[in-house]
View (cartoon, one colour):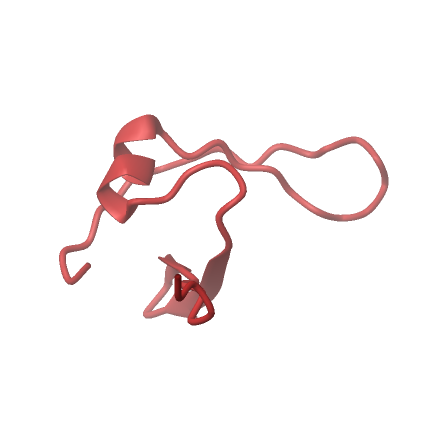
Length: 62
């Protein structure tokens, strides 16, 4: 996917003391990225923005 989708989300504390955060990605963002529940994403900071990209499994040969 070469087009970017920008959105603002709210970070939520899971309440387990882990220091992790949970974000709910809107369905339109998930659809634009072609990802769903259980898919893995990379996360990085690029020019002040958080960039998520799907990790595509290279071992999916049939």
